[in-house]
Each structure stands twice: as structure tokens, then as C-alpha cells.
Figure 1 (spheres, rainbow, N blue to C red):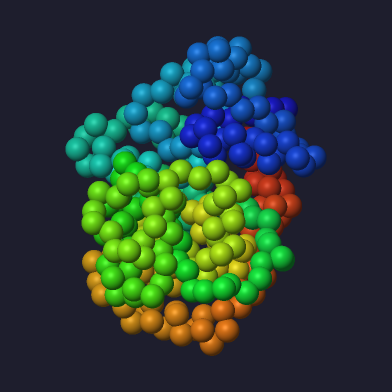
Figure 2 (spheres, rainbow, N blue to C red):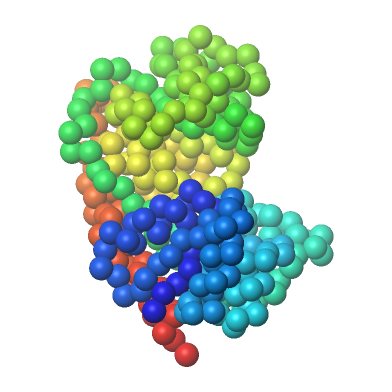
Length: 304
């Protein structure tokens, strides 16, 4: 049996590639219907013979791909990602939500707050992880305390640029490296460096140099970059409640929390956070995550 995958290209392509590396119970075929008409027609050709469709995005407006899945009475598995939940909740509030797919889907998320938000829409939602990390056992002691974050250039306020600037002003001896943004919308102190878009390998190299990874977003899914930061032995500061991270409260004074974190790093003599590496290796192991994902999809597809 096989299942088609579509949705947000980055996550859909990665998941399809990950599943192809294991001997799975289901054959997974990714169709990039977002960016290619040829892929859309390929999807339509394969759909009648597929057992179901995985959407790597919660869809609350009209979609030709999911309408076709309904037409052929295929099972739809909706994997919610992040702001798709807030978009759907806003649409429900103003009466513009298109709920045909939602009512006929099996819903999964990979973060407890997303699960709660999908349930606010009125649908049962189960937590199902699909992001993983290869830990870096070669990570070494940092040369200095350095903070790192990702900020999308087009959504700097959403990604916490103002909060990062305030933090940098309060801690002028620490360098803050920001990837994603080439030019800030705000005046920057000298210890904030905007590096623009970087490739995955360079992103990893900066993580290796950094003691702390900041994720100060207004809303989020389970951030792959936070998981990766764990795997490199960074401390993580996140605006969402995650058991592996220090909680950053947006709109509040977080200075004391950062001071305490810096003290912990100094007490380790700038050594990597080995506990985070061990937790990442156990909880976000590739074999474990992808095998469990495959098993759950098989269960859903074969359930009457």
C-alpha cells in the first residue's frame, strides 16, 4: 500500500526522504503540489490507487488536492505545523473557515499547544513526532558565551527581533548572531550581528560555536532548530513551554532568567550542555521517531 504526502514543501520533502531510509510498512510518495503543476497531475494520477493522503499542514480553506482526496474517499491525515492552527482559529471566529477537510481528517500535531488549539477547533488531535536530530558527540567547549537565533527577514517582530535587541543591550559583552535576516528593521547594538540566509551546514557551524539558542516567537510548532540546538549541546531559550528549554515570557522582564542561565554556563566552564545532547539522542533519535511515525500511519490507514 502507499500513501501520498503533500503540504509545506520543506517538511513534506524531509519526511518523505526520512521514511525512504527505513524499511517501512507503507510506501510514501511525495508530490510537491504547492510548486509544480506536473507534480499536481502526478498526484491526481496516483490518488485513486493510494490508501490515503498526508497533508503536512492544517488546511482550513479550499484545496484542489484535498478536494480530490475527498472525491475518491481517501483517508486524510492532517499534520498541523504552527501558524496553520491560529489561521484556522481566526477563520472559525470570523466565519470564513472551510471545514470539509477538517471534518474528514485524522489530526496530528507534534506539540501539546498545537494539539490544544486543534481541539479548540472541535477535532480530536493526537501528538505525533516526526522531527529528529543527529546529535553531535564532537561538540566541544565554547570559546565564549554566544547567543544565536533565527529571525525571518519579512517577519522580524513575530520572530522576536525587538526582544533580542533588548537582551543584547542588557548583556553588551555577549555576541548575538542572527541568521535569516540580512538587515534589521530596528537600530542594532554593536553586539548583534545579522548574517542573512545561511545554508544548513553553516547554520550547524554557528550552533557549534553558540552556548545558547534563542527562539522568541509569537507562535510556533515544534521547532526543528530547537531540537537541533539540543543535539549540539546548546542551552535553549524558547517562548513556548518546552521541558528541554528555559521559558521566555514575551512582554515581561526576563533579565533574571538570562542572568541565571549565563551563570549556569559559566559554572560549567563554558562546556557544552551534555544533558541536552543525551536527551536529544534518546528522545529525538531518527530510528525511534521515524519508526513510530510509520507505525502510527500504518495503524490509521488499516483501521476500519
